[in-house]
Image 1 (cartoon, rainbow, N blue to C red):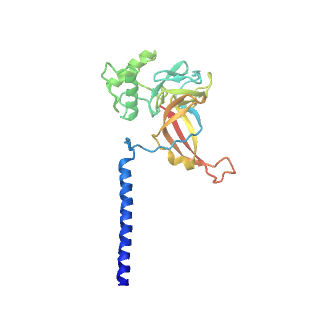
Image 2 (image 1 turned 135 degrees about the vertical axis):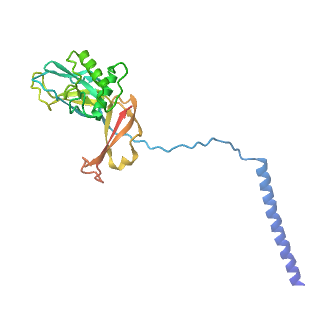
Length: 273
């Protein structure tokens, strides 16, 4: 009888605890239902992560060219002024009073070009310049490696316009070639000096502005050719867009001997568009 009574008490106690737990749980759920948590929505946009760094640079001009005289003559009779910008067809200098104009193209004049010359890309370069200057023999001249009768007619028209003998032959030294418009950085020759074939007339650059940046090697991975950049000028306010067009492959030793990692720097070039 005692064992039965104790067992009955035990059952009651367990039941009471179970009911209490249920009651507390039910009460909490009711409170939650009567006080909802405020929610809202937002637009999620996928985009690229970007890292921005600032680095000092030197503003200058892209490209470096030597304008070389190949004309046979006695004296240099005219030279361009430093800082002048020259376009296709404009006069770079004079030899014995004969003007030497600028032509565009990657190849220098290395042979006389006239009827019967073997085909070559220098002939096509001549055609391109004659056409661009308006000497296309009435639209019949098209650029090709062949020195055609149309090329000869265009050359003679160009020579007559310059006031020189219309021979139909463009001699080595009759023009000076550069990849595009040039800015005269410095003049190497002097008016009255002997006109030596192979002598440098002037140092030139392109007309495109460029910024040279010495970038720490540890940051080189952040830049790639074609990356967009923003160039802030010396006033600290004026900005202009640019693009990375070249990255140097040589590293220089850091100037600070106390540098903890002794890292060098690599050059990166960026220019306004």
